Amino acid sequence: MTPVRCLYAIADASFGNPIDLAPRLFEGGARRIQVRNKNATARELLDQVERILALAPPDAQVIVNDRVDIALIAGAAGVHLGQTDLPPVAAREILGPERIIGVSTHNLDQALAADKLPVDYVAVGPIFATLTKENPDPVLGLEELATICKAIHKPVVAIGGIKLDNVEDVLDAGATSVAVIRGLLDSADIAARVRTWVELMERFGMTASDDRPSI
Image 1 (tube, rainbow, N blue to C red):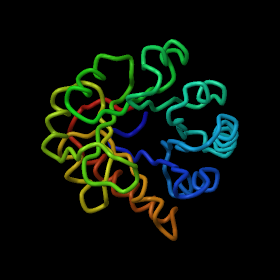
Image 2: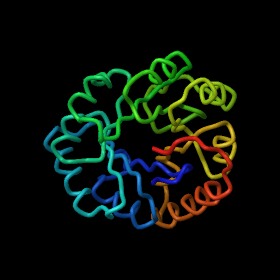
Image 3: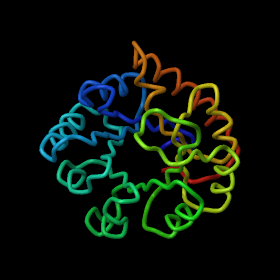
Image 4: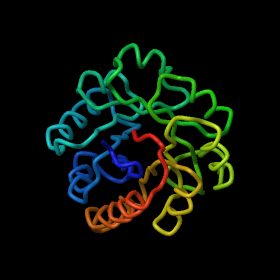
């Protein structure tokens, strides 16, 4: 079972080829990785996902950003959907009951709607200001994150501007796990940075007294 509080690493192509990034994320101890390449063709993304799956540790979960078809064909663990992607109900029909499906939300209304959908987790953000995404949605902040975490039942993955010095506040607000891009990939030694994050998340996980479901 995945730890209650864990690191959700994103191999974002804006920081390099995901095929090169993923091994360093795995080396550092990340075991849930999303492959994100907004500019890749379908063929390019499929090749990247298949090559990452071939080198992934047996206990790793590889999630494909946006593309249900790529996740299905490659045999990935699941897919992460945005608000304008294929609806989660259709994605569930295609992927079946066992694959992981997550959905991005950016406010309370979207999170409440997502809570009723056949998804395994609800991503909420941006929590803080972020430079990773073009034209980001308005910053939510910790108070709104806490409101959303209390209002919905599905696990919440917080994303957006989360760093080592504020992750504890994010978890205290009720997030089940945190998704990190720049905080991992903007480093000369990605594996070492991941190890620091994993050790921190494991410490929080071992001391957690909640019973929120894992994803």
